[in-house]
Each structure stands twice: as C-alpha cells, then as structure tokens.
Image (cartoon, rainbow, N blue to C red; front, side):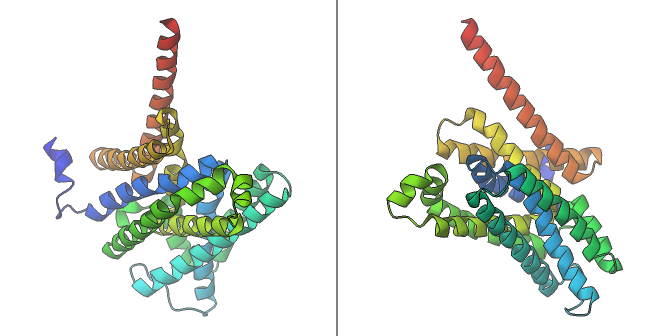
Length: 293
C-alpha cells in the first residue's frame, strides 16, 4: 500500500504521466456522455485520429519550410500542433454534423470513410519529414511517460476551463441533444448550440490527443460512459459515474503499468475495458437475482 501512495509524492519520477492519465480519464468521459446521448459513438473513434492528422499536417508544413522547426517540449511548437489539431477536429465534426442533419448516406459509412482518410493522411503528411515521422509514431503509440510539465499544465488549465463551461452550459446542451424539435419550438437556435458543443468537443479531444495520444483519448471518451450508464438513473449520476470510472481507470492503469513494467496506454485501456465487463456482469447478475426472487 505504501508503494501505491508513493506515486503521489511530488518527487516521483513519473509524476506528470500519473496526473496526465488521471486527468484525461476524469474529463474525457464528460464529453463521451454527449457522444452516447447523440448516438455518435463511432464519431468518437474517428475524431482522435482526425486530431492526430491535424498535428501531422503541421509537421508537413514544417517539412515545406512554412513554419518554425518543431521540437518536442518547445511551447510555441506545441501551440502550433494544438492549433492544427483543433482546426482539423472542429472542421471535421462540423462537416459530419451537417451531413448527419441532411441525411447524406449512413453514419457508419461517413465515419468509416473519414477515419480511413484521416489515418492515411496522417502517414502521408509526415512521410517526407523524419522528425515528424518519429513524433507521430510516438503520438500514435500514446507515450504518456514523456508528458512534460508544460503539457501537464496545459492539460490541467484547459480541461478546468472547458469543464466549467460544460457545467454552465450543460442544461442547454442536454435539451438540444435530447429533444431538438422542442428546443426549436421554444426558440432555441439549435445550430448555434450544436456548433458551440462541437467546438468544446474538438478542443477537448485535440488537447487529449496532443498529450496522451489518440487511442487512450478514444478509450476514455467511450468506455467509461458505457459502463456508467448501467448504474445511472439520472443524468447527473451519468456524468459523475462516467468521470469517476475514467479517473479510476487512469489511476489503476498507471499503477499496474508502473508495477508490472507494462506500456501505459494499453494498460489503462485494458483496465477501463475490464471495468466495463464487470459493470455488465454485475448488472446482469442483479437483474437475474431480482427475477429469481
């Protein structure tokens, strides 16, 4: 037990990685709840990859000599990468949202095509840039252990502001998500609220991908809400339980990764999936016992 609590000492060598995994695990499910409510779970697969494509596009521009040199850890370079990620992510979600409203094709086909295109472009953009190729591979593998103090501060400050905005605007976002027709009848501009929500989602995902990589960001977007929904009779508990399960997954995943010398991102994803499996089994057993009585 003492070994577990020693992780929280300020002089712990992987202090940034620990808090990075916990913070992403705690905040990303808050956005994931909206994916679940709007039946946009597949979009949660594509957007982190699109975000990575935006980062690789910045490396592509650097290879053409159109931007400053990118070196990990330099604040201005991280801001450039974040800007590329946000632009690509927000643009993609707005376009896909527009196609969804128009009924152009099926959701699965649109998201599948965008995901494939984003993955291909992320590789092509850095194919002529050796530095970018190394950085992108590190990003795709989710090397959280390399999280710097600047990255952690960016993550904490940004997610705190975004979390407060979600809390303040949550009632409007839920109304537009649940009953668009009633919202329109009551005079709400659902398009504006959609754009605002998509903007927050895009920034959330872009920062998560920049710090911990697309796979872990996707996992924390989707898996904790799926587990929490089985025990959440109200929306407040849905948000709360999703966030708690994500944070717990990040913490336990980091501890197992450190103790067993396993890669951090896959371990955290496996822990989150195990919690989902346990939630499913517990719910099923509870229903079975209720029926047996």
